[in-house]
Every structure is written in C-alpha cells, then in structure tokens.
Length: 413
Ligand code: AMP
Ligand code: GLY
Image (cartoon, rainbow, N blue to C red):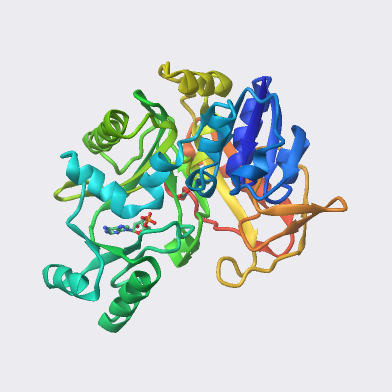
C-alpha cells in the first residue's frame, strides 16, 4: 500500500508515522524537508504543496492523506481524485467550510442548523455600522484563509472603535466582504471527527493552549501544547454540550451530502459552551495541530483501515486507548512575534515520550529552526498527571534558542 502524505508539520509527521507503523509505504509531498517524515518515506518530493500540477509526477499511489487546509483550499484533493487517487481530505467546494467563514454561517442558516451566533456578512462599512448598533462586542472574521491570524475580537486585539472600524474597512477593501459576529462568552471546546461522506465518528476531546506564555499570557500562537483525558472527555465540558456539538457536525455533513457533495476527511469543529447553549465558532477541514498528535497516539484501530473506510464510505467506530495524553511544543525564542530562525537545535535521548518534528529543517545533518514551532513531545499515561510528568521529563533534552510553556495540563488530574 503506497500512501501519499501531504504536508510537513508535526501533524503530518504523526499522520505519516501512524500509517508507516501500520505497514504502509510512505510517499511524501512537502514544502520543506521535515526530517522526521523524510526518514520514514520511501520517496519524498519538495514541491509547492498548494499547486495541484506539482503533483503530476506521483504515480502508483493507493490513496492520499492531506494535512494542511491550504492544499485543500487550493484544489489538491480535486486534482488527485481526477488522477484516480482517492483522498482523505475534502475537495475545494467542501473545504469551503473553512476557507469562507460566510459560507459556513450561511450553510447553517439556510438549512436550519442551530449553532450560529448573531452575525452579518458585511459588504460595506455601513452594513458593519448597522450590526454594531445591535452588538458592541464583536468578532471580526475575514472571509479568506489567514493561517489562524485573521480573527480579531473587541476587547482583545481591537481596543478602540477606531481600530475596529479600520480593521473592518481593511478586510472589505481587500476581500470585498467581512463577517461580523456577536462576541460569545463561555468555555471553548473542539471536536475532531473522521467523516466518510455520511458517517461522522468523533475522536477523543483535546484541549489546546493557544497563548505563547505560561498562565495563558502573551500573543496567540498555533498552539503551545494540549492534553486529553482517559475518558476521552474534558473536565469542564458537560456531556450534553458535546452531544450538541456532535449534532451540529452531523447535520452539516448531511446537508453537504444532499446539496453539495460527499465530505471525506477530517472535520474539526470549534465550539463555545455558553449560558444560552452551544455555538459553532468555526469549522476547520483538517486535524488540529497539535490535537492530531494526541488522538492519533491513542488510536487502537489501524489508521490505514480508517483511511480506507473513509474513502469507501464505510466508516465504522474507531477504537481509542483509554489513556491520557499530553503534548508540549518547543518553539524558537521570540516565537510568534520575532522568532529566531536558522538556529541549530540538539536533541538528546528521548525516552519517556514520542517526538514529532514540526517546522525544522535538516542542513548537513544539523536540525535548524524556522520561524514556526520546532518540535512536539507527546507522552501517554494512565492519568493526565502521569502523562504530563513524562512529557516534561524529556523536554530539557531538546536544547538551542528555544522555549516552551511549563503549564500545559497543569492542575488536571
Ligand atoms: P477562529 O480563527 O475562527 O478559530 O477564531 C479564533 C478565536 O477567536 C477562537 O478560537 C475564539 O477564541 C475566538 N472567537 C471566534 N469567534 C468568536 C465569537 N463569535 N465570539 C467569541 N470568540 C470568538
Ligand atoms: N490547534 C488549533 C488548530 O489546529 O487549529
């Protein structure tokens, strides 16, 4: 079985590793050489992973698994499917759930799926002013992919009315529209699911830590770490909220199947559990990073089987180990504002956890940093506390101009 894995982060490293451990031959398409993925690939190509025609030379592939959303938004799944390579990863018109916030909101509205906050798709500044008469506190969401950096909230990134209107105007001038939403208050949670076009199988819940510094201080990042619990739930999210989130995701997939097409891949729903119920914050059309590392490390059903079931539309309930996981990211000094890149890092003997490479590259046998997250450590245990102490036992073996958060999963039993 030859499987093409697209992407070069830690998320794709864990995807490739699971498939490799299940006996698949890994062929990889990367923008930069991830040493972890390269070491388990029988063939790897450094290409523009967002350009479909760059995939023309991949042959004899049984199926592909696409990690990053940009490749999905740029029709890589469509191209590979046309070449006869089935893909775990939705086609462009279905990936639209992530690349267009207005599309996701309008899909829910038009088909009567509950879960939207009050929102308005604004084409002019006066549309926005109209909405701001109703809601003082809002989220401003560009209608394009922004690498997780586009959403701005009043009271956080937008501190004055001038800043708010300036950002709204900037988005409208650039994209022709912007989405304004009432700002919700509550507890955030995410759900990741395998989807085969009709069946939706939810994975264990994972909590991630987005802020750069201890105590949830500092700028937002791609995530500094994450944990999951042995019962696959989170301590502060009640079961009925989880069921509500799952219901929104299932209804979305049914509506897509009946009106747009079969969504095959991973669906990631971001939700807010509020006093007034559960709201959808956003959809992502891929695994979370690092959340993929937590869940795929727990998988007890071969990942190769799940991928085949997704492609064939015959998904059955996957099994996950009833253990806890803790993942801690080590990142370049200065990340995410002014990261020190091209610095050598050294990795000692990692014994208590597993290591996944993210944005590092290999230069003459030396591993160097880029401007993004460097490596992730993942540990398992019978409790979160035990998994946590294992992940942190290894962390000082990774040295260089780097830092990490000390409080991932702190205080969770
Ligand atoms: P997104 O890129 O859509 O995940 O948004 C980034 C972050 O902004 C989310 O993780 C939430 O913390 C926050 N956010 C997005 N939409 C809302 C909303 N309507 N109300 C409150 N917070 C939001
Ligand atoms: N960890 C958040 C994300 O992947 O979107």
